[in-house]
Length: 310
Image (cartoon, rainbow, N blue to C red; front, side):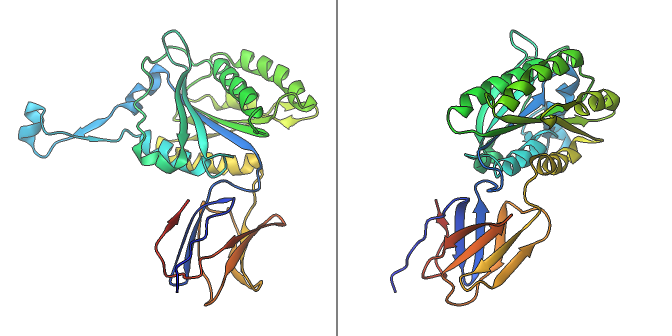
């Protein structure tokens, strides 16, 4: 028999079917249409130690002479890679705006770029070129809002930005005043609906200040912010994922059906980025149901073939 490939259909970005085992990767969460996400990493001086790369030597002799060292990821890098990979499943095109904020130098914002969630292991996060001496959040908010004005012309319908900090916000009053100006634009529809997530890391965070910013309720809109504090950077990634799910009110789960309507797998909690399940012999397609929406993906005629990538 001639082997036939099936291209992934949205919201799937990758499909692998072999010996009745299916592995389907979600390009984005289909329950949040047109969502554009971003993450802003604290670039203030208090974070400089966390961005330092550690060196590992084979023996004391090499360590003494400072040679043959293996560079290990800093403690921020694995967390940010995990966050990017997860957030890309929510983003409309799988590309996320990533930047440092509270930096030093000419601009308090240092944009890293539009990063793909598929290439996370190749990214490095050494910190900004110059660390800042104050943690001012309003410039980062303004950067994201300006970015979203441009993305709205390209199809973005909603936005969510994550801001990570390890200390006190020095311009909390300006942040609240700026938000009061933004909300009427969103209510009127001249700006896409935006939500902001503030993640504090470590014992230098002023949680009372975070609550003051995030508990503000805006007429006709509701809450613009949410926040949470992680004791260690190692807890940051999972915390961000939970907050994004809660904020964007994504599906609490989903159901996979075969082409005869039989349930193959049920996800009771958060829908993962990669769906893995078995199909019965002769099955020609499967359907993912989320919040009463159905997305049907045809399967190759020969299911013992190699991977298919978009």
